[in-house]
Length: 337
Ligand code: NAD
Ligand code: DAU
Image (cartoon, rainbow, N blue to C red; front, top):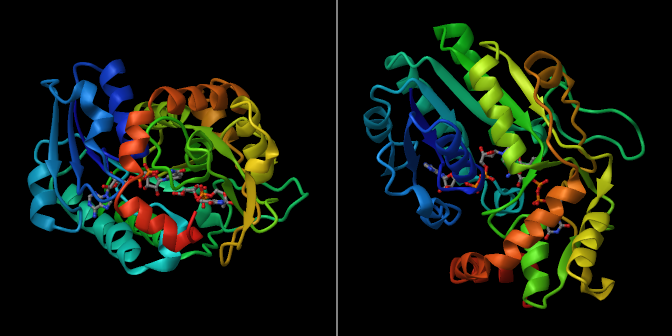
């Protein structure tokens, strides 16, 4: 089988390629990635010479590049996106371009080339925001209510994917997953930012009151969920994917990381809130569990320990990332530090 992975140099895409090559060594993988600030070929160093792996640097908005990469592809696994909410608030245009137009360009090419599956990696953020202190969770029947330029652009891409199934019969599947964490995450997202900031003896910036709740999914569990959907998922269906967490807020996450690293709570710094900040996410993943037999392997605490260890042992990876563009972004987002 031959897979086209878009955005394979990013956080989840690179973890997915490493996972897939390890578990399906006979499959071929083409990685199409523009290498924006978030793309990093260092993540794929251990497989760069593998004969079944090839890399194409290109933009998913460019129909010619996409069409060339799509030749003889069986499955497309579409990760490429602008993925950070704060950046979408500062500069929404690139989010619409990559996430909406780029997805449509890929879909056109997938139809033209008769791919056997187009799997779209989406997010629970398309469902909007839940209230604190209630037991509601997002599921596959929850109405879309995106509230940031990022989630609106992902919702747009989800609708296009569904439309290509209804209109052109493209065999699609979609996963809407919660917040991922793990190795190779760009240190702009809260867990990788918190760990690396403490390792640099800097504070963790906590937005607003810190009582915002996210559902936490370890990246390898997410890769296993996509594998289950590719192998056993029903064409035309969406699956919600989440972690083994029960309403843990950002402050509690920060405190757990501080404790693992043996520091004290003076590392917490409350900063200005994110505009339109979604209060709570919680994901009901019973459909993928009941229908495809998937569930997360370990608890948040176990995966968090493992993640902190990875960043502690891979300082050269994140130190190289926290330079240049990153410093300018950090200063603009948080002020001097
Ligand atoms: P990321 O920002 O780490 O990586 C995105 C990758 O896409 C980068 O390698 C980048 O170079 C590439 N890319 C961006 N624009 C491109 C373009 N125009 N053409 C080709 N490549 C381009 O993102 P991530 O966290 O790995 O997320 C991957 C996917 O999963 C995204 O679609 C995101 O919406 C979705 N998702 C992420 C999370 C999460 O917690 N990180 C949760 C739910 C869903
Ligand atoms: O829910 C899935 C989504 O999770 C994905 O679709 C997105 O691609 C991914 O970026 C992530 O979005 P969030 O906005 O939830 O992740 P982020 O790590 O930016 O923020 C997590 C929580 O932490 C959120 O409540 C905001 C808060 N936060 C974040 C940062 C960067 C802080 O308090 N301080 C910070 O500096």
